[in-house]
Image 1 (cartoon, each protein chain N blue to C red):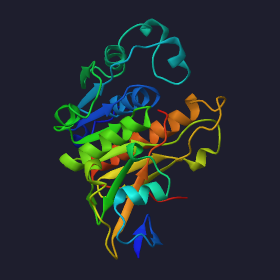
Image 2: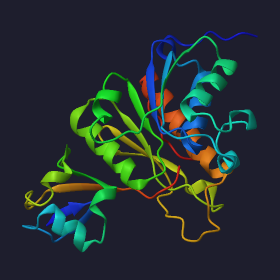
Image 3: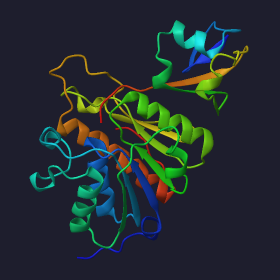
Image 4: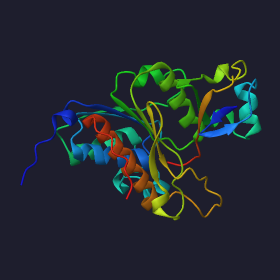
Length: 198
Length: 64
């Protein structure tokens, strides 16, 4: 059985800011859906400690995350376009990096970086933004929600700060949040938002 | 009265910086919208809240 990729996805350009636990998993989901162009931005390198939740392999260790993810995605879906940028996103470059994308997905780790990106893109650009806040530990999966919190801002997560050193970021809940972000990105591109519960 | 994330609050004539200090948020980890308009961080201290303003504040925690 073959499925035709939807035109809305083929023609879409989606940017992912940060290629850690959220970003690497979001990218895989969107590559499999058949998003036409994915822009992958991160300055970091794949390390062993990333493998507990980030979508990389031992063969990727030591590589730039942007390059490693691009290579991996080409193995998943060679028909989409991937643009990798080995860059640190700052207040000075954030608008020029992301202004031409239909949807921007915030997938940073640092809360100050999250706020910087969301503030500046909401202020200067028109595209919807999907951000994430709170997915540590192993507490209830049902606390991870997608909410439309501002006219162009969707927020995914449970909003809860990790309180102990044991409560680190783990694959199951990080993937949950990543799946929420990827889902709402698809809904935005299809022009049909559905956040009904139950 | 103003509305902050859906709740009535009495912060009329405060600026945004005073409001977020009062509710103990870090100005570097939030996004603030007043009456559907994003308020740049640089304007937090000279944006005075008026009666009936509707304020939405999104606060980020770390992890990703």
